[in-house]
Image (cartoon, rainbow, N blue to C red; front, side):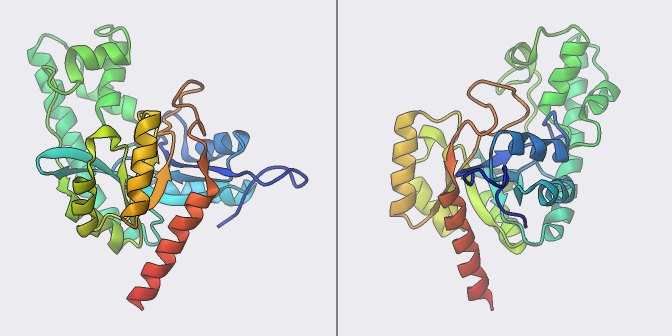
Length: 289
């Protein structure tokens, strides 16, 4: 992989962003364009973590190699822990093809969920079509943001927030439960692909006991820095991560926002955290040989 980007005479970039999305799922920029945006933001490395797909990784890594931005192969999965949905990032997938078959099944489940959601909206008097939703998704893994986009385009919602508040958000009339795996299953899929299992944006909902239990099931890392976390949560999660022998991670969860608290690189994630992840990957590989 390529290393840090930037001008040859400039000091090396010290920040990375390990949670980003492209048009391979529900982001607005193509994988190569995500990398270009990261380069322009002065980042030395990113992780492409599209929902339920690794389809954008090859394009992103080729772009990164060309301009000097390291691209960590990643994915974001939805899992269930004690009845609650949590998101799990798989980072450092050395063999993403090993997870591709399982992700194809999840991608099909997403299409089924979109179809059922459209049928539910139709029953509620909203004549949005499945074709409009799939058109919004393009080649990416279809999700609620694409349904929201179709609702906005059709005039049935003012904007994305309105679409989720009225119809698609948790507990709203057209919110359909998604197909998920257990955390242990998600961690196994990620480990089989050579990666690290990261608890994404746990916020204030993750206690020490929760993290200890997940660590016993294969958790490697906690996303300490995320736009949804308060300053106190960042401090608490960082301390727990260190105490439990896990490694920290962080990112902007970028989907294309040009500015604001989810802007690219906004989390100021130290490159040292990436080095700690690399070391954990190396140690695991040694244990398997």
